[in-house]
Amino acid sequence: MAKFADIIGQEQIKEHLQNALKRNKVSHAYIINGERSSGKEFVAKVFAAALQCENPDVSSDVPEPCGACHSCKQMASGNQPDVIYVSHEKPGTIGVEDIRTQINGTMAIKPYAGSRKVYIVNEGEKMTVQAQNALLKTLEEPPEYAVILILATNVEALLPTILSRCVVLNMKPVKDSQVKSFLMKTMQVPDYKAEVCVAFARGNIGKAKMLAVSEDFDRVKEEAVTLLKYINDMEISEIVAAIKKINEYKLDVNDYMDILAIWYRDVLLFKATHDVNHLIFREEIQYIRKVADRSTYEGIESVISALDKAKGRLNANVNFDLTMELLLLTIKENS
Image 1 (cartoon, rainbow, N blue to C red):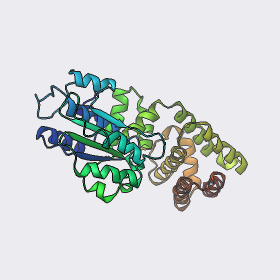
Image 2 (spheres, rainbow, N blue to C red):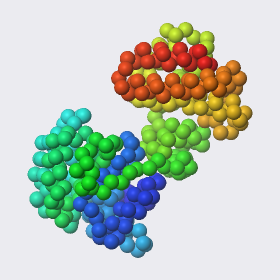
Image 3 (cartoon, rainbow, N blue to C red):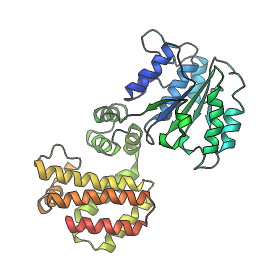
Image 4 (cartoon, one colour):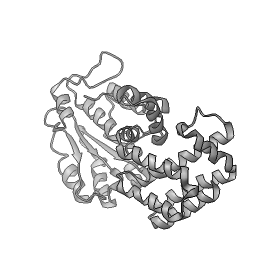
């Protein structure tokens, strides 16, 4: 049974929610805003469990769900009847009927067991304007027992009228030291692999966990590093063929681009300091040194800039082959 103590980082959010519980000043609606895999749903479930707990642990100054009562056991199994997870059939959209049938249409029904009824709306940014307007009617006059938790990756996609009626809690990047400690102690990830995962996760604990157990990530990392090591001896057609292989994996293309970016960050760092200790790919030092020696600072920065531009183009659905060819020509010219 997850508790507030199991949330890595996010001290401000934990403090806010626990103070609300302690003072019995829980808002009727919260927006938990943060990037994908940052732990929004985990936070929401812990808060929902604490709201529904029959015997909350008040022995310390920090309220926690007990983990042993009937409600907590239901939460752990995903069967708490007073915690409703709003679903939607269309993958890219939460429509007006989803809100009307699952929230508005059931809100007047009092809780089955406890004193609260909690609604969790994941991917809240996918609500259409009509869906948000339908939700707004409920937010304006909610029953006393209702708590709505909207989880969003882009709070700007929500109407100002929705934002003004909710408490907005922003997820923050978790410190690298905390992420590394979690991976090593809780998931028994070796030191070097934990460092690599931390570098790519950039404070996103969920992403770090996913990378730590992803065989695809290990393979893609190896292929990307091999490409970078031998890129000067390859024809463009060979390079494009190598990059196209990433489509065989279940990894986001942005993760592949991040591998390339971190390699060149290592090259830049080594060129400036000649210090191996802070490199992410330090086991590849002989190749890092070669690239650093033959590249100028301006050339390395041009590659890093080109990587950022390529990510932007791919996110905007610009042609994959064209984008990668432009990027790889820049890499060959400057490495």
